[in-house]
Length: 486
Ligand code: ARG
Image (cartoon, rainbow, N blue to C red; front, side, top):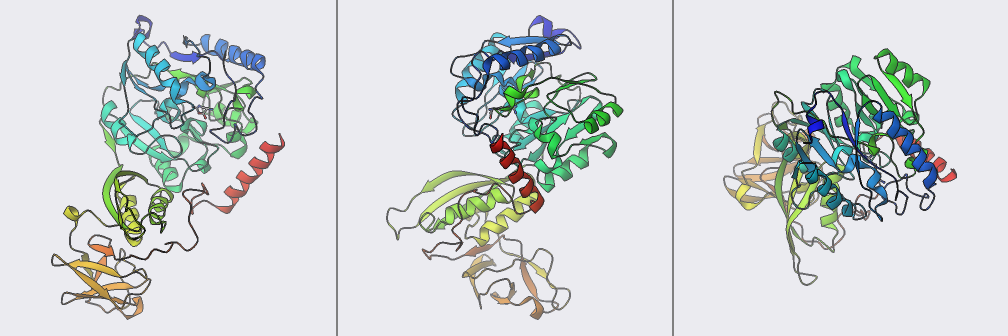
């Protein structure tokens, strides 16, 4: 740390002059239609004004801008600082990865200890990772930019509790576009940018009187992308309603036009990086993120099964890494893939594993256990977590050996008796029978070369998960139309 950084309570931020700022490519929906449309003189004025407002309340450090790196002004993405340590960003888009060495050099020159994220994982710094005001909790997003797999790694490195939040609206591609922790434990956020589990997480950790929610209009005006310096909140725009909410929470708002930066999908917060995030006195590493390996075998590519499995994982709120893949050399030859599935918590992981077992994946040989059996307690009522069958030939593991399920049919219960297994309609199961639950010890035998989904699933084309409401989709379409019109 520099000497000035040692001063107690002196806020310190990093900014980068917009000398080379422009919109040269499209990596988020805001940039669409804005290539070459930045008025650089105006951008400079807006940036200077923001700099002036911040510099009157905090210390501002500057990094020299680099020609050819138009997004380098958005220093929030340089990395994540805690005490004298920084985790350097590793950008998801190749357009921004050339910024990394410049930020590294600056951090090193300013005596930070620079940490690099593990191979093949992405992390977009304080754009996607935000500390609570007490510094003990770190909210980290995943979705378009930052990998879910990095979350437990960050928890361990910084010895903090990480709460994982999933971004589901492409317009709010970074956490800091829709989520703004304020001093005093307050949180300003746009709930519709998250999946329902994430909203529940927010509500679990932030008490109702401290939650300040904003609507689509405020969110689209980047009101969640503010800079908070004590009781002053600096932002591009603020509705009267939001101003009133902030004021009753004890915050004064300072509005400053940053329209030129919105063309690249950024605003006040994106243009700054906090360099003085303190190391909390007490905290401990915690993350609910969990992973498990599965194996997929057979006609993975030509039957579209691989993309079916990957889709199911991502749509279900998880993430995957293909650890090893052997591709069959001819149409008939089977392929094998070892896939690491990661989910924000164990229960989501279990449900993902169950889904993909139904798509033909299985647990690695060493990890296979017998199928878990549970008693039926009442005629026609299956245990909560019963395995619901598919149309594909299935085997279950009983007493250490695989047995074929007879009478294969869809959406039924697998009953195991005397070392044999068969499918049974739910209404026909009887109290006392043993049925398969979960997906351990279950595998599908599928060697058909036809497309597995009928509908020809593409990988993550919709960007809208099944739990999103129709009105949200309409809101987004309206936004697109407006954006095009403007
Ligand atoms: N054009 C930049 C990008 O898409 C904008 C980054 C905004 N930064 C932020 N922290 N939200 O990466």
